[in-house]
Structures are given as structure tokens and as C-alpha cells.
Length: 87
Image (cartoon, rainbow, N blue to C red):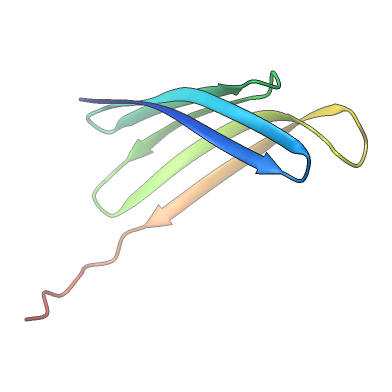
């Protein structure tokens, strides 16, 4: 079991943000989320196996171009290759 809280600062142009959130892992199950000082948020859920990781993410952010809040979906797959020990 792993519990990982975090705080991060980011600035994009004239838009500064402070993010706070957490990630939690219990065996193969992963869940996480964060919220910003600008009331934006992200949430994720997934599974991590020996050779790959599959994660679904949803976030709501403010579009700089349109001036509205929009939601987006993301599915991420990461494959882990075998590493050779080089001595």
C-alpha cells in the first residue's frame, strides 16, 4: 500500500496555480486526484501490472482560448520492457 500526497506550483503565462492532491496504490489498484487554487481538478483510476499500467483520467480546466471550463478524458497505457543489467 502506498499513499502519496503532493503540492505543486505551476504558472502558464499570467495564470499561476497551486495544486494539491494524492495518489493511493493498493496492490494493483491505483486511484488519485487533485484540485487547484483556480478550482480545476483531475481524477484518475487504474491498474498497474508487472509489464504494463492502464489508467483512465478525467480533468476539468479552464480553456484560455474559449474562456470556459471544459472536461477531458484520457486513457493511458504504459508498457514496461525488461531491462538488462549492464556492468
